[in-house]
Length: 104
Image 1: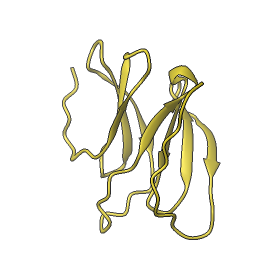
Image 2 (image 1 turned 135 degrees about the vertical axis):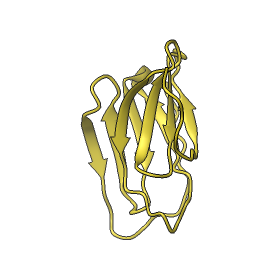
Image 3 (image 1 turned 90 degrees about the horizontal axis):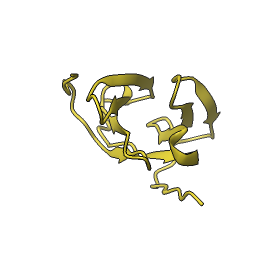
């Protein structure tokens, strides 16, 4: 069983309630199994320690993808199962809004 050893920000639970993703305010996102409480993957995200702002998280496509913003304005989408980057959305400057996604 893994223990949280870092400060945490926001979190999201997968639709099937099998996983919880937690923004750790240090290196990015940690994904835990809610069945075993083990750390499954760590997803790196740009974290600016001077900002110390929780990053919004969201599972997509029935939990197959995980998305998160970053302090440099990029939005990263990872494949939950293997931790690979699916897509990175970049733009000039830092966007300071909250984004909520909905699954249909």
